[in-house]
Each structure stands twice: as C-alpha cells, then as structure tokens.
Image (cartoon, rainbow, N blue to C red; front, side):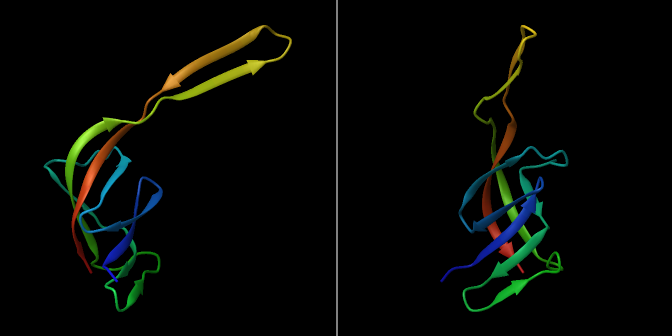
Length: 105
C-alpha cells in the first residue's frame, strides 16, 4: 500500500504518487521550477482514505517542472457534402511535464 492522491488541474483529474511524472495542460501562474497543485480531491496514506467535498482543505501536491513539451498532433477535418467544401487543420497542445515530489495532507 502506498500514498497516492487524486488532483484536478486543467479540468482533468490525475491519480498521482510520489515520484510519478505526468503531463498536464500548460499553466499560466508558473514563476519558478516548483508548482503546487492545491485542488486535491482524494488522498490515501495506505491505511485511511480522505475524500474532499469537493476538495481537501490544506492538502497540496508539490511538483517540479521538468520540461515543456508538445502533445501529438490532432487533425481537425471538416467536410460538407455537395458543396466541394473541406478544411483540414492540425493542432498541437502545449503541455508541462511534472514530477511529483511530495504529497501533503
């Protein structure tokens, strides 16, 4: 049994453990190399589970910014029948690769 937490960032939820790396959507408020995710939905220490309503008060996940990467290309293709109209556009989302350093509950 290990310590883990479920955090929310960028309208997505991630299950993280200490030492894990995860890709999240780019964050605007990053000033240094350390990022604190404070929207913790659930935390477990191996013996007990704490569930927030909706978030756990004073719980944080401290992460380190490893790099800024781009996601795989997504293709957007629009086609209208009988109008000889089509459009193909590609998009690559910018992501942050984070390394989870500590889970504080």
